[in-house]
Image (tube, rainbow, N blue to C red):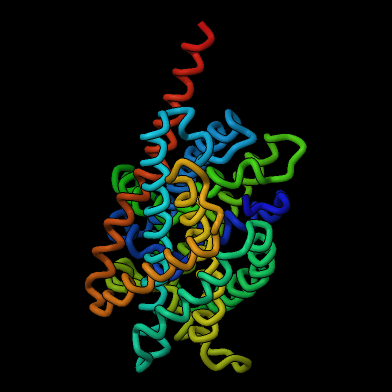
Length: 365
């Protein structure tokens, strides 16, 4: 195993928060506003509640097998052949998530900052940094992530400073004007933004805690912080833009930062995008790390060459990423990724928990 030491509860909270936020911060509430309009903030709250249900499912799975990660106990639930297949699917999903994050943010940098920089250079640099960190141990990754929380707080301050200006509070009124159906429908794209909590499937046995219940509390706190952060951004965006404008601005937060003027800093949008790169790379290297750990268990024995697996997956991500020079492919790929996210982080853990529960009931008869 590559685990040298367990991680703390505080490190778990940092991992979950920064694994959830990622690139979606720039686009909130663009996708939701097309469905629920100014009530998108309510869709985000519901999305956070759905994520909390997913956390409960993952926690129950981990509590049933407290000494092992999903890769190790999956065979006990569905048998070895199917268990190996599920491990392979999780490895592919995590690699796909890493690729999605890198490609999406490289597109943001390419359109807003580095217009003339070749696409393969942007992808290559991000993959290089991601692979270097992901080849470390879980404890090292957790320590790095804990340090990057400072960057997250700086970005929060930037958003707070720039968000309140010439907006209109009447944009929020009347509350619920679109009805409950659009709000619930908008919660579906909102839920995609909360992906990341599923890392608990792997890290559960490596969290240092006297009571396993503390892990659930930590996960809930992290998900709560992410939900409040998303709602805060949705509030600022809705305050600044009309409903028609929101439907045509894919990254409304960047527009708000660009139009804000402050004597101390010339361009808040450039500062934010640059700093937020470190936060985005957290999501990328966590998923790359997880992909390698799932891939390590697709054979009869655990593959112990973690760094080699990381760099092989990173190379595949780089090669695949170079094919996204045509920007129209990115939204299509993101739509496919959203579907796979729902399956892999909500449907699959739920099915596994139900099978585990049924097997336990049968065994106790």
